Picture: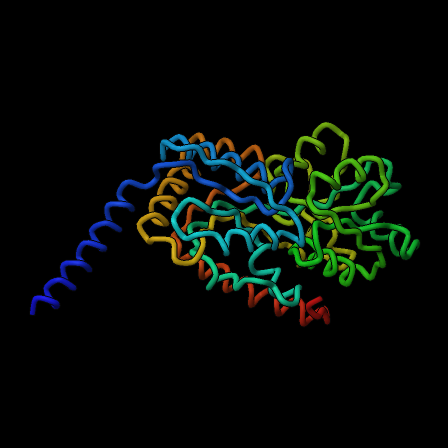
Amino acid sequence: MRRAAFAAAFVLLLVTAAGATHAQWPVRALKLIVPFPPGGGTDLVARSVAAKLAEVLGQPVVVENRPGAGGTIGADAVAKAAPDGYTIGIATSSTHPASVVLQKNVPFDPLKSFAPITMIGSTSYVLVASPALPANTLAELVAYAQANPGKLNFANVGTSTLGYLLSLQFKALTGTQMQDVSYKGSSQIYPDLISNQVSVFLDNPGASTPLVNSGRLKAYGVTTPTPSMSGVPLLSQAGASVGLRDFDAAFWYGLVAPAGTPKAIVERIQAETARYVQSADGRKEFAARSLEPVGSTPEQFSTAIQQDIERFAALARQLGIEPQ
């Protein structure tokens, strides 16, 4: 009886201590891992969210860029971190659903290795190029690529990313042959794109918008309505005559934590992030980057990841793409 009472008291003590620890969280800085280099769209979204979380949580949120392998190196660092609420990461359409479809031996499970927190927001893709490229419309670009097979280069930020999958779809639908060129992040592509060393790039508009608006890049079309690029047509409309009538993909950014992170901490981060992205300040900040705020629950975010895995796998099968 004494042993049983002692055991029960010990368990109660542990539970109470754990609850007290969670209630006191956070007592030190948090780390937000971004799986791409500084300066790109993912990094800009992360820094905006990190600044707001630091303000409401009362502790610094330090952004750490861990690029490589299409974002899977940074994602794996999140998956392997201690589940104590002090490490979170940016997840994207590329790092989670697309990576396991396009890449062999991904070192994490996009759902089981993480505690999904929230989808921050979604955005479009924009097809951008150097002003020096001798094609001013999407139809002219496709015609030029068809007349010059293998001459143009199609940049991507990794062969396990959604942008790469969509670039393959673009080439298949238009019957064009372009060489694939991989970089670690979009910020590294821009100088080569501006100087026409690489030909075209399917980018998210977060970081490329000012380059298009200033004339340093030109945009042939966007996959979904993009307020920050109001004069740029939809790819599905501008490219209807060249096979792109159904080319309308979107891209999302989200927050995840290592699997096993206490539910109370996950819910606190979700609530604060959702409150920010849906606020007037958050909407204004994201509108400038053509990002539509979401702020979903962890359960909704988990469902969205699973649905995208299935959708991207179907597209890969349609295109005859095997994991590399």
